[in-house]
Image (cartoon, protein in one colour):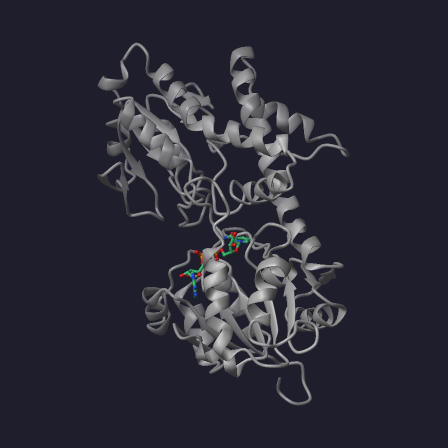
Length: 425
Ligand SMILES: NC(=O)c1ccc[n+]([C@@H]2O[C@H](COP(=O)([O-])OP(=O)(O)OC[C@H]3O[C@@H](n4cnc5c(N)ncnc54)[C@H](O)[C@@H]3O)[C@@H](O)[C@H]2O)c1
């Protein structure tokens, strides 16, 4: 720390959707950040003042470097120059839907030669309760440094919402340290960047906080998705019912259906909690059920597409898919429902092309696709337009005016006057 002021030297490991905005915030607040990422391509892009995130413009990267308090590289040596080490690496699922902590453990191991007395180590990656104390503490203590005495360890969940207008500093930061001194150190660091820091009694509580937030969304969105199928049979516009229910001033929170739950967090984090529960021989049926609903959504969507095209058969029909990222206004394809939906469309023999301003090309089951220019002429070529992601800068008027049928999984066409051709899924 610089003498006499609360300015920290911070290593941020993992410069993705979470790490890079966090680095920016700390630099803007006057701290010095050493960003470390194993991906050489990303580091080189940053060094060339280029961005790989939709929320980050080139001039913001230039601005960061112009402070001379932002450094990036692939080497962990920078850890030795810093008082604070923050880990923001991925926590995906493996092929059996089990937690894959390999990125966290590998990154933590890589810091070992550079750890020293007096440092604070914080995990921000979403993970199951117990990770910090059961997995990271032993790694840190393998250096001979004792957590709580020589080195501090805390967990602080990242709550960033890419693509939204929330300023990172305005989102309260939850922190929980292994000991009171660990918590105090973490509180001091985050208070020097965030407007509000919420202290909880342990890393386990902080880890659970993040999973609780994401499980709530997962379960409720999945519930809406299961209601879709009932609403279809009852000839009810579920979106209209949700809006009407949302007028109740208390006791109802609006969640919306969609083509499935995607992204790196909402469909993944609940399975981390489920895994932990099962380790204790406990069940979490709400999560299991929501996972099942989520897994069936692609099939349901493709069935609705095929039904809507009748009397044309799937093999004779073509579909224009609008939006393939897991949510609007981001370039993130992780766990996007569009992928299994397009796979299932291929299996059903449906020909399709796609448009997404953020994804220039993609491969589905070995077949390469490139985003089409969104023109009236192109839209007219297809039997059906299927809206999977409601990016903001798409002309929905153009789609509705030029499509024979529009199947809208996001209610993106809600303001259209001519709704004859639109079916909400
Ligand atoms: N994306 C979100 O909206 C979001 C929101 C809240 C929490 N999270 C959580 O934050 C964590 C990070 O997510 P993300 O979206 O930033 O992921 P990301 O994939 O965008 O970024 C992670 C970065 O870590 C790097 N990395 C991987 N292993 C490394 C290693 N051993 N050493 C150095 N760098 C390494 C990768 O190259 C990548 O750039 C995850 O646990 C995620 O669940 C994500």
